[in-house]
Amino acid sequence: MAKTKTRSTYRCQSCGAETPRWQGRCDSCGEWSSIVEEAAAPMPVRARRAGGGAAPVPLPDVSTESFVRLATGLVELDRVLGGGVVAGSAVLLAGDPGIGKSTLLLQASGGLAGSGARVLYVSGEESPGQTRLRARIDGVDTSTDTRLSTRRTRSRSPGAPSTQPMRSAPSP
Image 1: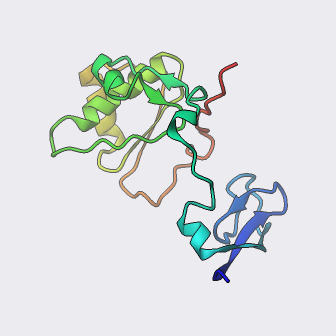
Image 2 (image 1 turned 90 degrees about the vertical axis):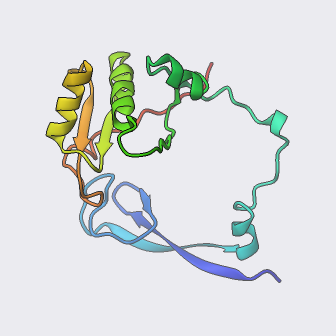
């Protein structure tokens, strides 16, 4: 018999949103004291380790038609990313200090915003003033995109929850 582990989920009674932990206020609807603990169906430990029990699928059978790519306007970056940023994805950019990571991402966010995409620029190292100065120096149009810059990654800006990520829609 496979070993099972009991798991709890926490659901808002006002809007139905689920969270992995209890919290005093629902992030989705803003209601206070509306989160209640519910017992989730136990899942065998082995199935969780194997990817949630999903059956393997041959790679050629996996559909990629639902991935919408957004061009950043930077030809080489778009080429490296396979044609642009996939909506709803995260891209890790790493390199030595001073190599130009922030400059590249600021220019890419300006290109995305210029094409009509909503952009949330988050920086853990630069202040909002530094980000604005860098944008001005690099010639990035900042009139169309949203920026959030913070040094404390656990803090949240009042504007952050109202900025919803873009969702990719399946192609017709």
